[in-house]
Structure formats: structure tokens, C-alpha cells
Image (cartoon, rainbow, N blue to C red; front, top):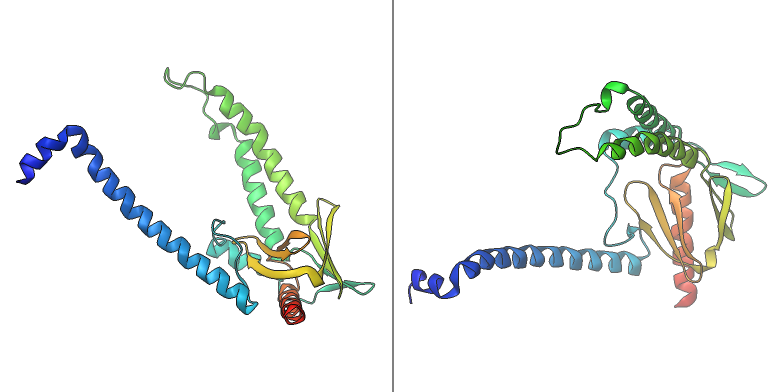
Length: 225
């Protein structure tokens, strides 16, 4: 049977859908293969007690130019208070957040940035821009408050993570099982029991914190062996 005869048998619908199914299968194979590789890497890091991906699906790393600025100040000495060490956002990440917030506020209040005339096809969508003009400044201010009020306190027994000046949860180091890299912003620490704690990657004293937390992972693994 020739190609022409075969195509006539499956019809125009089959001739259209078959290439789509082939492409879907090809991309499905590539995605599945990549997810399996990520799973192996995550399991290997967990077995070794090192820092790997926090999850299959997560945000990418911060853009290089932002990441370069955000790292400024991360190597400084960690703040201490009554036996606790305190991680606070680095001066670099504060500058990044302030810069983005100022840019958002500037454009959200700039009349020329927002359309004033709409075509017939766009009629009825004006409310989207009205909502955006309210939400964008709110998001900018929230982002600044979130970063500037974030901190993580820890001593030899516990980790306490605070956001928006509210103490979220207290985690006990003896329950720490692994540490994951959450992508652009956070280190994610997994506690059983206890859940997950997020600590900003671009914090002053983060290197010392990583070393301490990894040592706790190894200590807990040795104790449970």
C-alpha cells in the first residue's frame, strides 16, 4: 500500500491529527525524560544530604543582572541577639526590590502608559486596565514590605521564620530531613514533622546558615541510621 492509499484510508481528519499525536508523543517523551532526571538528582541530593532542587516544578533562577545585585551583602557577618543568629535580606536584594517597586509605581501612575481609546473589538475590557492600575501599586508596596520585614532566627535548637512582622512557625532542627533550592528566591527546608520553612537565599549570613543547616541534616541522618 502506497502513502497516498494509506492517507486516503485514514481520511483528512486522520492526516491532520496524526502529526499532532506524533509531536505530542515526542514532547511527552522529552518532558518525561527530563522529569525522571530531576527526580534522580533530587533523590541523590537527599541521599547525600546536600542541596538540590526543592521540587519538580519551581521558578527559575533570578536573572543574572538582578542576581548580581541581590548578592551584594550576603557575605557579611550575620546579626546576633541573645544567643540567636538572625538572617535578614541583604542590602542588594533590598535595592532590587526597591528598584522594581519604584519602576512599577512610576508606570502605574504614568497616564501615557495606559490606553485611553479602545477599538470596537476591545470594548468591554477597560475594567482590566482599571483593576491593574490599582493592583500594581498594591503589589509593589506589598513586595517591599514583605522583603523588608522578612527574617529567620535560629539557634542550636530551633528555626523561626517571620514574614510581615508575624511569627509564622517554629521548626526544630532535629526534625530537618533535607534542604532544597527553590529557584530564584528561597531555600526550602523540609522538616518531618513540621512541614516546610522558606528562607530567603539572598540574606546576610546565608553561607553560614547553609553550612549549619547541612550539618544538622547529616547529624539527623546519622542519628536515624
